[in-house]
Amino acid sequence: MTRQKYGDDFHLGQVFTTPAITVTETHVVNWAGLTGDFYPLHMDAEYAAQTQFGERLAHGPMIFGLAVGMVALSGIGADSVIAWLGCDDMRMTGPVRIGDTIRTTVEVKEQRPTKDPKRGIQTWRYTVTNQRNEPILSFDYKMMFHMRGA
Image (cartoon, rainbow, N blue to C red; front, top):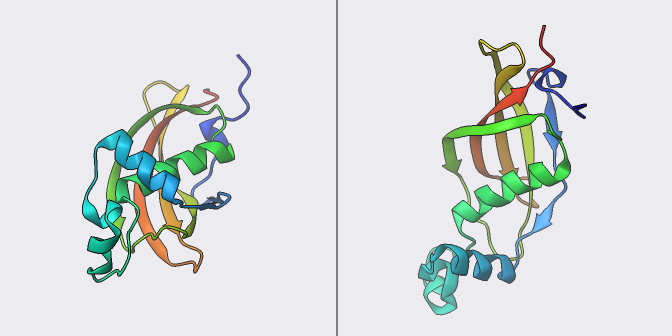
């Protein structure tokens, strides 16, 4: 099988940025229905108006899902990824309001070989920012990649 990309095509420190997406009411309502997370900060405008935020916010885990999806849709990794291995050091550093526009920047943070020369492990640092370029979510995303081999 001929691949579009391999893990070898990515280099430490390399940075990619996705196109942006605006978080809508539909995203929030669909996420709540899918996950069962109807917490009032996300779903109850009257409740949310009384909080420090003054309005409803998007679910943090939904922003994680959107970040992963934006990177996938952008085609950065193409068909080079074998499997997702986990996520570390996740921090939500700011709120996402309905109507905010977010994008994800990815930096190749770590690379290591495996015993099989046709596979490698990489950690990519995802940073999600809003339309004011304020960081709102970051995490280390670990994946196994197809490598060209010896």
